[in-house]
Length: 103
Image 1 (cartoon, rainbow, N blue to C red):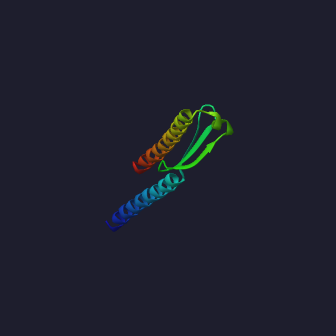
Image 2: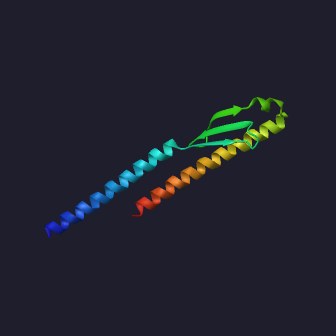
Image 3: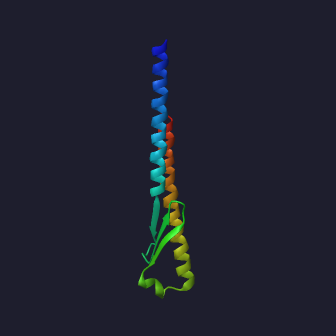
């Protein structure tokens, strides 16, 4: 009886450690997520962090010749594409976590 209880406790502890490891790995992966995107013509490049906040914006010299409205639209579109990239990465990490926790 005590041997069976000890095995059950060991199994529960092993599952708890495994889940804690999975959570830790997911947290590290989420912290490392960032998204980058380029406009189709390459004039605009945007980088966002894991929370979707803009952390870098680069404009090619050719961008200075664009109409202001077009440049603004390219910037918005490119940042949105980078945010979509981050969202896809975050979903992948969380999907892996759910799979790991389901084991």
